[in-house]
Length: 161
Image: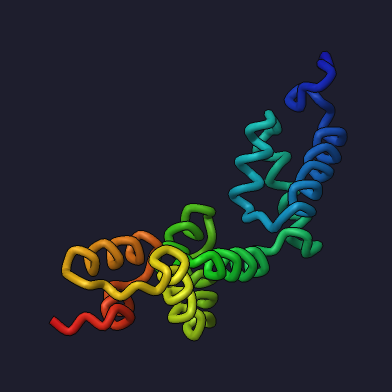
């Protein structure tokens, strides 16, 4: 086999595994990642799927890569930025996380959502109460796009119609 410097696909298996692990740990040191995110990033750099999977399996066994820790950090960070449970569920699914893990985390955060909704509204609308149906619709659309359930939005905006 001819080795091409700097080309992951032509590297020896032991070298490739060490390179994959080094890069994966470097990415994980910056922030938590889901397994799917790491697979995509490593594959984009030209590493073979089998090599990537074996390294990530080992990192999971060793605890460096942990889906539940990722879900917990990601959900807390996004909720603090004013995103709701519906948006978070979609984002976590997109990152390849198991539905039961997502359900458990979002359920554990039930008491967070009303505060997150209020903070998102305050940041965007500076606490202004909708004066008419148009303003109500605008505020409701914004909060809906942020991932809050319609019932929560209407209850928060005190829509009585």
